[in-house]
Length: 113
Image 1 (cartoon, rainbow, N blue to C red):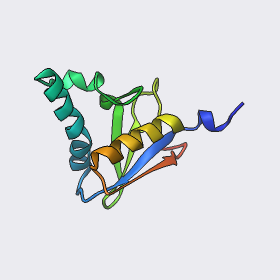
Image 2: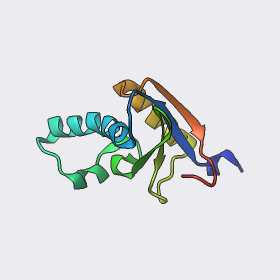
Image 3: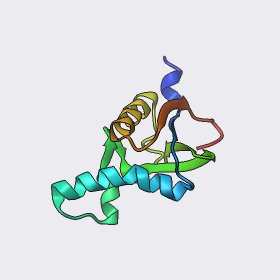
Image 4: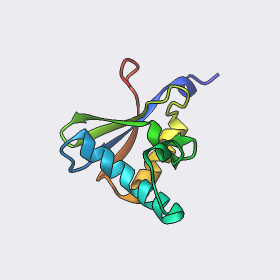
């Protein structure tokens, strides 16, 4: 049995954002823009329908500033935690959208998110 499969992971990003709200907006905007292009409109409840990466709903993502310009992205949904595979998929999607300057996947602090 693999121990690493039970670990929670997060995506640590760096960017020139001054607050969690700015970073969250930067994270959400590209996905919302794609949704609107495909469907013509967006409503807040659609966040749970938009997949940031396979198996990861955009609305389930939480972002926390851990240092100036450094943010930790985690899953706020206990039923769909970020496994290493999901975190890597999310990180790749974030890299493709170029919303942050640096993107890394790290194990989460067991007592934190």
